[in-house]
Length: 138
Image (cartoon, rainbow, N blue to C red; front, side, top):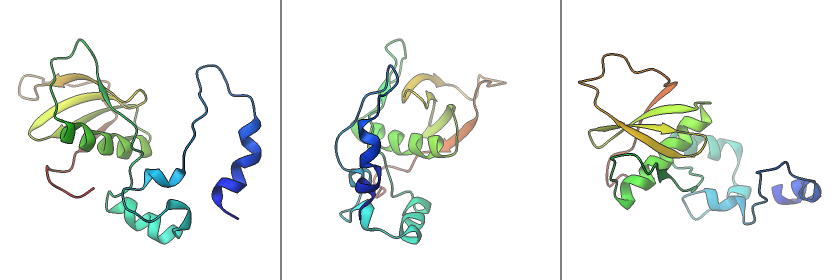
């Protein structure tokens, strides 16, 4: 019996307002070719520790922000946000390519760029995450 079969009875429940039913395989969250459902807990733990698991959920930039990121940076930022979310963070400071950006983890959005030299105290941050460097395999 697969993981999807275990949760199938729950798929007919009524969802609260604002929550949409998602289709697709849970295995799409894995950045490799091996399906998530077929992996052991030890394999999953090893991949998570190596930063090789990703939700693949998109990241956006708030329209009022003065932040430009490449497609590669957006992908790496998404992986960093996955790690922040897994640790329970709501607002994080992500260090990426020498830049510090403040993100709202819940809505997966960059909300501002932070100049650490000019900011003596930075509040409303519950995690600091280093994004993988450019060219790193994720």
